[in-house]
Length: 97
Image 1: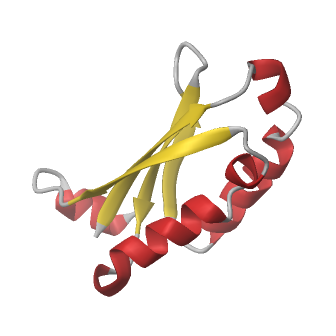
Image 2: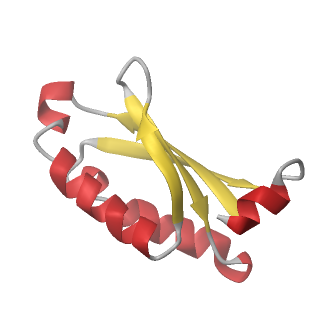
């Protein structure tokens, strides 16, 4: 199963930037484990988006853990909107990532 996470900042960008290095280090662990496929900031910079691969048998638990372990969330800088996603077009290419 795949998911899209929309991250929306809850604090001014200047405050969010004080936690960005920790957030990016956390995303690197997700990327290295194969959970995070792509990520980046929104334009204009009001948050970001993640493309995730999560286990079919524990989608909600996996997404909750991803959100809850993000330093942005732990430090009250951002909130997540978690959207489980079942792509059809392009699924073969996604599965090769």
